[in-house]
Image (tube, rainbow, N blue to C red; front, side):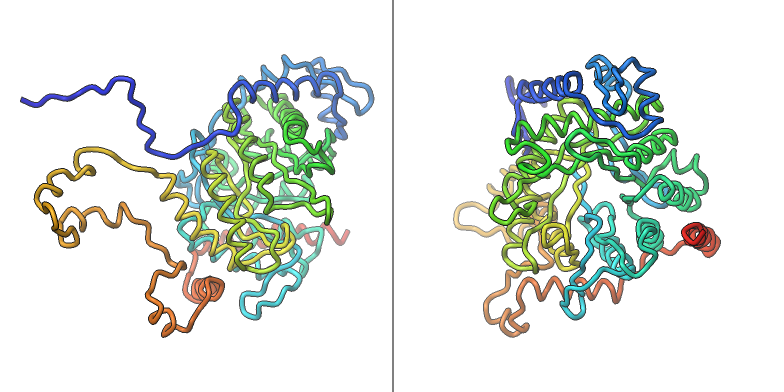
Length: 488
């Protein structure tokens, strides 16, 4: 007779999660943001946005707008609570919901560590190509950003050039940044060409556009035009502030979060006023200003604390969440770079943020590095194994195997070991586990050496799936038309 026992009051935490803020604390910060919007207000530099806010019965005095809290609460009922991002071929890949976490590089580094020479130099378009190829090959990198601010093209079209390069060198979802709405239009035209049509891109989006208000409480014409264009076209947009605690936001984390949430909710409201149900990715990210150097610190513990608390707030509001990890203030790929990246990746994955960017950043976001990206991939794999937790069922408890082996036996040759070792045990590709003599015989290579070799091996051997010549011709023409527009 088979019976099943019922374990009362049992909660199985198969995966690791943590929260910085309780629901009550999240509510306090959201209410503080609503108070800021109603009492202090925000500056809006877009006529279309001002018209939408006036029509919704906001208090508009020139560019100053005060937003009633009921409008925010209504917008929260229409914005999607989940977004699914596809790859370039329309396959559904990233499910921004629950505690699913996905990692990718960051954008806009004006400098790059040359993978061949180690030289720190100005970033060029080839760096976007290389970043895309390496990211396409790495198993724990889920989406692609450029790690770049290109210097060897028409500078005002660097954003379009970057997407042009990424589209050709990865099938993974892409997050792009842009200078203005004209660039967004060109980028969406390119992506629609790859998808087959705008309708297909809307159905299976593989592009997200990043736009950013100017903290504190200022929303520029370019930022809002990008936001409203993406909303109008029912495509996902990220609209989050980049706060510097003690500089552009209060030094206290609670105060900074209140400002950041207020800025984010302003964008959320406008997206829903433009088109109810428009997909929107939220966050209130930021990091501290080091009071000795006056630098924005990516490697500080407060950087990860702000991002984890932001994830709590937007989990509380049931929204897809943007975050950051895998970056460092170090100028080279060294122990500091590894330590800071590991701390951030663990914190961000444990917080359950959805789209997590900046893997590959050095020098406080001023330098991109393929070695740091490769190292980040290794750390993400390690953290994901830890987050996965412990599976407990009859076969995993292995009581029959233990009984068969008995006291003093060994499990190396057990069929159970063969069946489970690849599932249970994470295997590194960069971290060294050899005996000392083997490490010595293999060239005494450091972790940085091995990361460099792996990046160069990927660039030599990995060939991303190509676009058709027909599609390439169209996206080349879109880029050329943008170039001609700049010359008029």
